[in-house]
Image (cartoon, rainbow, N blue to C red; front, side, top):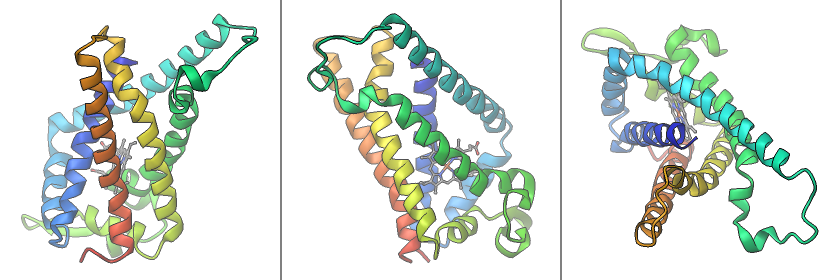
Length: 221
Ligand code: HEM
């Protein structure tokens, strides 16, 4: 779980960094430029297969761990004060992961299916919203796609914010836990890893949440 978790943590840095280019407020030009380069790069496309495999593996490992934990303690403790031994979000990783999964299904339907399979995943005609030009060729205009998904769509914005909040708590435990899995439990380094984990979770999730909000509130052109 540690290895797949770290891979997903790295993916989120790249994904968030790339998406944050919308804040250049240049009508998505820089974002679309890099999105196009990434989308047509053979190494990145190969890694995309790895990403989905790791995502599935991470979920399966989580389920196995959950089953093992409940099998290891079939009867409940007589005295159990979980709040004194661990944080609520470390005990709720399965629930938080499930909420993220629900968010991801909607999210991939919004962005990934149209960019990989044309208009199939969306009800609107593709050509209306999603074609832009780059280097004199027609490319998928991911920025316009974002405007379409979030502008005038409060419910979707709220769902995304809830998804990102779930991700935040999942990462708050998951980041540090991934390092611990590799045996990195040290008097000096563990507090540092925990601090980096909190910083990472705050920055990544704030930036992600700001994307739908900024578009909904028309802060971006
Ligand atoms: C909340 C703001 C977010 C926005 C605006 C956003 C936007 C996008 C866009 C535009 C794509 C399509 C990229 C492409 O087809 O080339 C995409 C793909 C994807 N996103 Fe997000 N995303 C957000 C948050 C997240 C979060 C929080 C996660 C994970 C928990 C996530 C996971 C993914 C995955 C797995 C893909 C498919 C990867 C791929 O295309 O290779 N996204 N996202």
